[in-house]
Length: 304
Ligand SMILES: Cc1cc2nc3c(=O)[nH]c(=O)nc-3n(C[C@H](O)[C@H](O)[C@H](O)COP(=O)(O)OP(=O)(O)OC[C@H]3O[C@@H](n4cnc5c(N)ncnc54)[C@H](O)[C@@H]3O)c2cc1C
Image 1 (tube, rainbow, N blue to C red):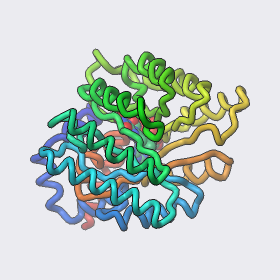
Image 2: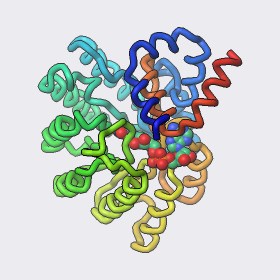
Image 3: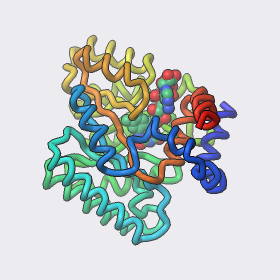
Image 4: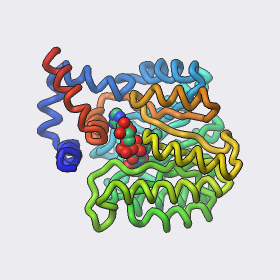
């Protein structure tokens, strides 16, 4: 656990970011989890996934923006993404982080920005998933989501099984008909709000997965954990829930073998595809999920 916490702490460090991103070899290794810097790079990656019958979600990397101008630029980027999905006939939706759309600067502006993306997506008959960030943003993120969901069905939310509050949130969100992506949670949280022991997060994941999959709403089961996947398969088999009633979701560059295996077994799989210049915090969270990846990075940086 200490390595994980240290990596999550460093994911917010500007000093380390400025130091590491000076090395070309560091930027090269981030490509393991990031499709590239441009929309064209992500489009290419998604076309390849679609060829394997895997659907996708575009994520433009850009959390922690510091001005309203930057937040508006993110909206423009997502409008381009939605147009590009349509023009290229890609099987993909989009994922957004509210901090990227101005949540920390001006929640009212953030709501308007997110609404602009959700409305544009509706015109394209597409869908917007609102990612969940650290627990300081859970309430404000849920509030923006609920206001949007009151008018639009093409918007969904994320729930993290490591948060103690999540069961209550799921119950409320299901009453609203919300489409939920269930994940374990990727941030460093105090034990007052999140389970400190992985087994408790996993137990909660299974409990929440069962609630979601018996709700008659289409949800995403986002995990690379074979135990969570096995529990899901076992549950849907026992309940006779057809495989087209939900989807597994995974991250770009993580467990490609498992993604393809699930497709071959007749399940739906969606892959989250990040792209953009601002890959540092995203990359560091991916390292924290599997500290063994640090050796991969160091080896490749030394080689480069
Ligand atoms: C589609 C998708 C969207 C997500 N959206 C959010 C979000 O909005 N908010 C949020 O807080 N979190 C999000 N996450 C991240 C999530 O919360 C977890 O941090 C991440 O998925 C790792 O948890 P796990 O379920 O894979 O299980 P873990 O128990 O962490 O890992 C199980 C196994 O999966 C493999 N694995 C997991 N991660 C990696 C990795 N980075 N590199 C290589 N192997 C790995 C390893 O073999 C590991 O032993 C998302 C994850 C996915 C898949």
